[in-house]
Image 1 (cartoon, rainbow, N blue to C red):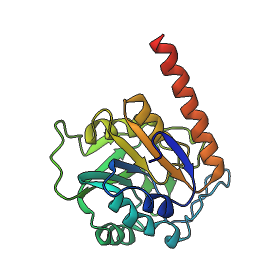
Image 2 (image 1 turned 90 degrees about the vertical axis):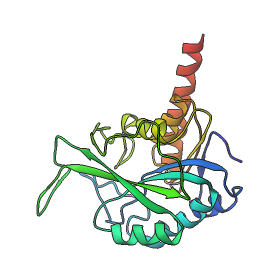
Image 3 (image 1 turned 90 degrees about the horizontal axis):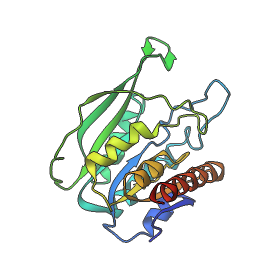
Image 4 (image 1 turned 45 degrees about the horizontal axis):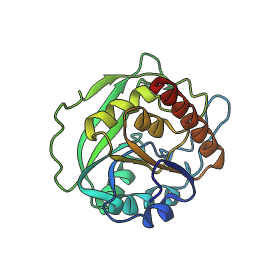
Length: 219
């Protein structure tokens, strides 16, 4: 097991090597399959390639413990493809979380002022002791390290709600490492994977900063 590591590689292959039922919680933000480019022209690997994203969910589900959760961000335009992949992997859609933005991230037929994630269940997990509200306020990360970077303040409540200290949190689309940072700051282990070597380096640098902070605080 690659505990407390950020792995550069193909998530399907890495997850297939994990022991079955070894992951306590998945929190992940995969490419939305929209061929996204931000204002600086930055893009995401496999954001135009469903075969690079959707096959990850089957080995991910196999590696999850029975009666556990996965939280997966997704946009609306490819939601049919994502829901089909989740169902095929044996994951049941049990909830949606919407974050309300005070700005428009994009304008088209309307102003897009929200972000969504979907709560998926493997088996029949117990209800959280303190369920999150289905609508929350968004914290903007600034997207400094990644074109679609999620703030740690967005990820941390998910980890606290759907896992307990000492659990193993997995993110197969790690990006700049917000999930691993949130896990480490909340007393969880992490195992995060990304196909882009640049983002893996960024995530490792962020985790090194968290380790230094925790060491200094303990002293």
